[in-house]
Each structure stands twice: as C-alpha cells, then as structure tokens.
Image (cartoon, rainbow, N blue to C red; front, side, top):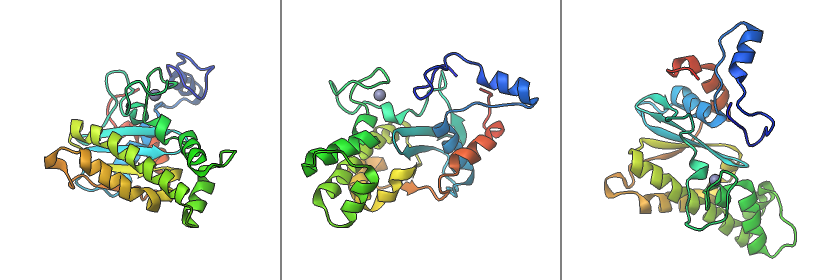
Length: 227
Ligand SMILES: [Zn+2]
C-alpha cells in the first residue's frame, strides 16, 4: 500500500507481507474497484466481452479495467482511476492532485451540492433523499441526476474511445437512481463516441448485487501477476 486517502496513517506499508507472515497463507492486496472489475469479468455474466471498464458509483467514483480478458493494473498499479479523469480544464482542485476530475461532478458531495443549488434549500440532503424527491416528481432532483448522467457519459466516452471497450459495467449505491440518469448517460456517451463505436458499446448494470469486489478479491490468484 503506497497510500490511502481514507487511511492517511498508512503509507508505504507492506500490508500483504505482514498479513501473509501472520496468517501463513499467500495474500494479495488490491484496490477495491480493481477487484470489483475482476469479479464482474469472472462472474457478471458478460460472456464474450474481454475488454471492460467497471465503475463503482458511490460516495466516490471507483474504476477498474479488464483488457483482453486480463485484469489491467498499469505501470504502477493505478490503472482504472476513472474518478480522476479530468472533465474540465481549470476546474476545481481535487484531492488527487489534479483539477476538474469526474468525481468532483459525480461523487456524493457533488450530487448534494448540485441539488442544493437547484432546489434553493438551505442545507444539503443525502443522495437517497434526492432520489426519493426525484420519484415524487421534484424537477430539481430529476435534473440533478440528469446532469450526473451527462458527466458520467462524457468520461466513459473518453475511455471507450481510447481503449475500444466491449462494455462499461456499473455497480454501487447510486445505481439505485438508474431510472433518473440512464437516458442522459446513454445520450452523452454515444454523442462523444467515435462513429464506429456509436450505439455498439453497452453500458450495463452489475447483476452481482455489490458482491463483485469480494468475488474478484477471492479470485485474484487467477488475475496474473502478483501485487
Ligand atoms: Zn481527482
């Protein structure tokens, strides 16, 4: 583990080695979204798709890549960080060290901030409440999810154009609001895809009910190189 934004005290710590010594078994340490991508590839029922981006829509935006049927980690193990694909030049600063990242427009706090600005409320409310309001016909809440879908669609198109993806698979809590963002997501995604890919790259919902990370982690020994 080089560092973790959620566990700031852990830096350059050989977690796998310590656990392996203590437990007497081989241990793999992997980013949760990367493990989820592997789980989706193995157990998600996406037969015949060898190249996929798997994205977790939650408090933050996580991502993992499977390319040519193998878990793709990149040169330093950071591949798949879709949440930190920049969408806007000179956008707000992000904790990752960059600016204008996707997560700043689609994370939990972005949803809350967007809805706050549209609704004229004085206090932010949780995405779950925004979702409930969208169901009850609140236009500001519906617009918030529509914008959410557009931002995701733009970012996914960047990745699909770069890698000629077979599919994008979505998982995570915000997927519950799918009905309110899938149209703007599909529309924006296909608008920015290069012509040979337009309407040919499915965006699918995970059928593993949040278990893709655990399943992928359990089968990391089948993912190739050790980390
Ligand atoms: Zn960032």
